[in-house]
Length: 272
Image (tube, rainbow, N blue to C red; front, side, top):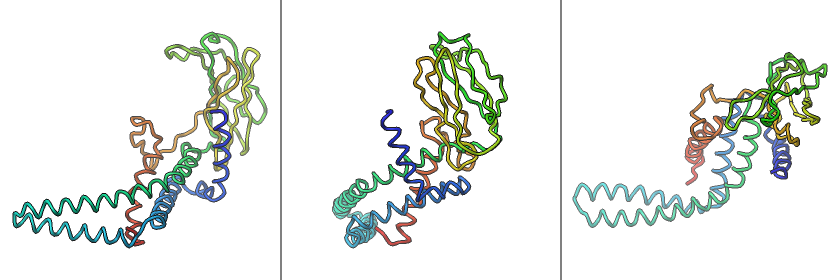
């Protein structure tokens, strides 16, 4: 995992060059345009890798077979209905092969786009002066012992710098400590936490169009993880039931928008 994360960060930064401008827009508009771009990419790739003339003929044949099936039903001709169903199944099988070919081609570029969006759309970047809670996680053996945050001037520390580690009432129990900060200017900051001879460094970006990961793994045995409570992005302010299916809210809206836009673009561009 430690080897994958730098690679993912590098890929995200590369994709920022063609797509980073989306993050300057209102987030709902950014998501709509991103879904539109994904749908357009999928549709154009479909045109590239399939025999469009053949697929248009298949679609025309299916429309005609639908009419023949309706006529056979009205006449009660069961043999004709069976022939129509057999022919329809064969044509849909041909279309399915074409769809699978398209899926194999679009899978990688769509996955890359989704990875980029996962790094850029999950949360709202923290704003200047916004109160932020930074939290550190400790083992149960650290409960009751002291920990502290390095109180540098630009940190805007609201809470006392020295805290006692408290139990987080999980099962099994572990320890946590929290501080509230307000960063008065934009930039990248390194927040330093210390406990029992160990130091943890949490990277935080404020007042910009991107953000650092809110949860960050640390190397210490006692200071194992730090996190900052960032605001989760909810399209149009709706949660969309994401907690039940384990997907972030933006992903659900993105999939719905893409699935709606693909057939619209196909019809506009006359792509089968």
